Length: 439
Image 1: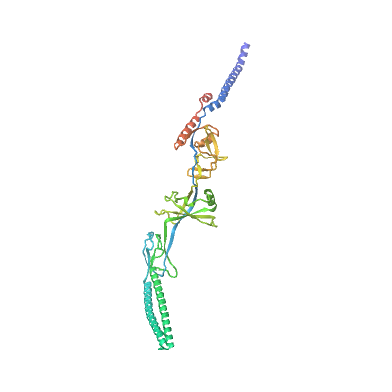
Image 2: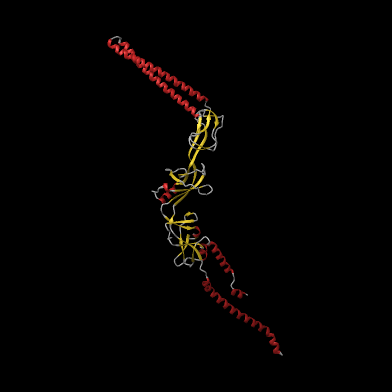
């Protein structure tokens, strides 16, 4: 009886001890299984790690002209201020404002009444001078004949020496009066010419061909009084000058790149309008200033562009691209292929064993969607440059990692995005063994 009571008292302790031993054995077995799975995971992950596909292009040196982009303003090839050259009342404006005019077209009419009277007076003076010449010629002829007769008579002493001397003096005086009359005629004709010019100036004509602006005066105004009154402005803008401003140090650097003996007449100039679109007509570089502006430390480059369609207007702000092909070669590397790291910029290339290599580059010149790599910088013809997938390479791989190069195309970004999406969904899916153990 006592023994049965003692056993019943110890039974709970034995059950607790058995439960503790079973938990310890289960934990030890589970820990070993997880440890084995952890040991096998890196090896399985290494075996299942995919080889990434990357889009590559083959490097090839091409001719890339030296280029500079500068600001500039359009300037008319000729500008003429139409001015009143005589004083008078403006009667009418003949031209239409903003129209094209040709040289010597009538633009304004000034009251010509006073100037016509001056022309008539000058013509009368000319006629008077011509009559005076006729009288002087007659007197000179008469004096010459008289002197001739007296020279014959003096030989027979029919006249005195005094009479001969008087006749010769009269002849000389008549010839002098004849020259004076001729001078008066020349002066009268000059006055007539001046009067006729003043009359002609009452018709204000276009000094050059071009497009005329608005009239600066109205009918009835007094113009030309003590000054040459401006009436309108004509601009000849076909072709059109465009003056570009370039810092002197940049011009020196550009000349060093293309060479001191470069033929600037072969430089290609492309004009960019204010909306960024290129101007269709090609231009040519005429000259550069031989002095540097001391206030801006810059040099003016003058170019010439056809402007038959009037796309360019005087004073318009423009930008121009200057290109000069000096025959040098360079590589065009897409911008998306260039990576920025702590060590600097560079690109990934795929070697003959389809492994990655990082090549540092100096990217300072851009041309459209590409960086221009001059002087090689370690890049050679035939090198395969990673273009698509470069960001993923930098994030997940390192130099020396194997990749699968594919020719880059425009459709590759879409395919790569789909591949990365599928890879991400696979990485997010829990492992079945882990689920069973957790459960």
